[in-house]
Image (cartoon, rainbow over all chains, first blue to last red; front, side, top):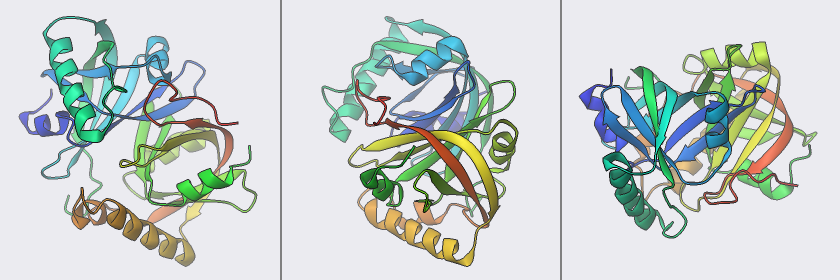
Length: 134
Length: 152
């Protein structure tokens, strides 16, 4: 499902955006520091605060994600469904280390703190046709 | 809700704009916006959505009326999310095209140390629809534990 070409866009070099929707139908769009490649069918999002995104996906598990390749600037659009949350293990540890690096690079040390790695099943993925060079 | 002056200025500056909607099955959808301004009533905002890339989202908006727009500065991390209801849309006017060109130029200048000009200039942002929506609420989006707090 997730092609190899998407991997550079999942390394946190350029912030990503996640869109969710509450059960009462109110959409929400939030900039996030990290969408992590788990395997060819799953990605993980960092859960740092009990914010609207986290509340929404516990009510309505569907999300849309936009991630950017820092080399080509191609944008990828993913639809995914929340599966489960992990508070330990290799994915959590790798995300924790990566998020500390991102925090250091963006001046957010002490603000970013990983509570859990939220694992999502990828339902669809495509390159957005929103650039003049395709 | 009336948009406070400092937030109006932020919205009309070089903020990255992400627009989110949902369909009848509550599936979210999103797209970039390329320019925005607060209308004279100060209770509604017009955003510029590119024809083609944002067509599905515009269709959602017309059916469900629900819209959320995040304005974020990737350098200062200041950000706000406006939530509201779709009002109408029409093709962008020449004055709005000029406003959009100024917006793209401001983005290029703002992010010059971090992104090449081709990053912003390479997006397909024309032609576009000028989409107006009524503001119901505004939320702080700066990263941290207070993200999501309502703006009075």
